[in-house]
Image (cartoon, rainbow, N blue to C red; front, side, top):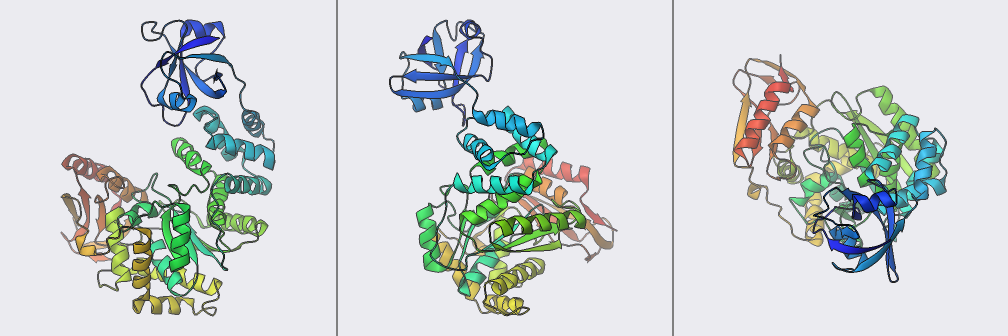
Length: 498
């Protein structure tokens, strides 16, 4: 069918979308979401169909091109194109087989991952894939195949050194910002640690969001390698110009929409990102506690066992630790507030949150032992020595300045304009700080999109408080958002004093 191009002047996002008059669509028995092949000269592509019921907007014989499709086809309004019905990609059949409970091999899995990256699967098709891996589970072979496929369809950072260290936290605990402490300690000790981190999806801040307050994190792969070769480490966003395991971002969005966390997808995603930077030694942190991503010791042990099995397949040394995730780590929740905590720890400032310092030192110590820079049981002592001597701070500054713009003075990091301080209504002891409640309040206040917004904790679980003593403060750039955050906290009551 030959059709005349009409510029719809709308961006569709990531998909290529064409708009058809409903009568033209009926002729070819096309429905919303079906695929068509569009060709002009030597250029052709496949697009998803949307259907117009308004002949005044799109007449018979016309095909509306969204901006992405115009750019892809290099056509303009008034050009004539050929359109035929296109078949669904083979990956849809793979997804159907997974839904039926069959095991996907590597070729099937890679086909699905390639089509996710190429935006050849609709959100509905991708949702079925994610849901089927969650409901049907994934075998060790399938997780291994997904890990390989994620690595091979993204960037790979090759470094001419050994060992290469890395670490990851499963998540779910606000403020758990150990990466900016671990990386400079290890790099100062002479170990290589090319750390890539993600942005927040459901939390008040991801590691990349926090670090972005202090330095440039969106760098190219070549720049990343240059920084690592110069300083032994880096702290960059893995989803920007460095395209590590790109299918993962779309999968995570679907998981969030469904309110699920598919274990196989999580294992593959984490290991793929670590192996993409050529890591040889990996420390995995699984915080366990009420409101954390993992709430039971039994589940944590199961995930630990799974990590160790998959890591063995890829011949990478992995240590998995289970830590306390019953309350936020550090005092600040939100990019700027967390950044100040990090600087206070690195500067050995009296305002440094002790729990964040202790966890960072413990994790750095284990990695120093894994990397051969400290004897077993001596890593924590060496890590603390590097912190107290100022070597960690110096290395952090070197890495930050090598990556780009750096703001490393905590006194210049000013909180959002509007604030509300919650005070204790009675004398007693803090018995619970709910991770999910604090995260939600911080996000409603504006974090992470507004770097200055968030929650500052003044008390932690176990602290004794007097009536009217401050418990925490909410910061926001908007009086309206502050009011919403206040009302939400009043409703969910996530800070308990008994």
